[in-house]
Image (tube, rainbow, N blue to C red; front, side):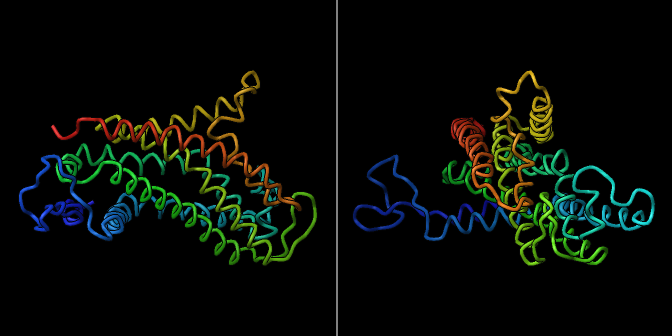
Length: 307
């Protein structure tokens, strides 16, 4: 975020006599935000996040995953491997709609957590390492507002990553395999239009399922001035959660793990979608956001980063 945008987003409190910029009667008088200041800050942060070359390259790399997967399956569809493969991958050659699900399924374990790690690591730790955060906080801007802006911009970037994967997968699946009536996990078939709506539900659920990890990443980002450390901590948290989720001895804590409900998007491929299953997964994410969002706020608003 440009310091000039933040500096221009605030004005001094009016003097009791009605003169702006005059001597304040209260030495601790607050600086009041100009109308629309939050929107300008958010637009500036969004432009910074989506304008970084590394982030553009990352989005491009993620969008290439469904294209490469589709091409590999298209070339191999006449071999003995056709129709085989883990989970949703084996269904892609029969209906291009499944390329959306297969691509998200392959990106969820590592690539999307890595994306979140990079985005959150840059959000606070990256600016602290570059010295721009120190300059921003020397201006009269509230830290809570700045943290909210960075969180929203990061969420927008992660949402764009998920949406980019889905759109490329839909286009590639349509071109390579065609779109037809969607056969659900129960064997029932629904029209193509309904199938596309189901895919939209999958994309929305996957994006919302990553909000907890975004909050974790922002918390790590407030703890250090080394962006790589925050990135690594975020990815490791996702990996450890996935490993713990595979241990039957820890079944009691599985429902509360960050990654436990990530694959519940398969609910959209059932004849009757159970809102309770989806709601449970989103409730877990909300709890992680509440806890680690509060920790990030506590750390960011009390840390000495201006010295």
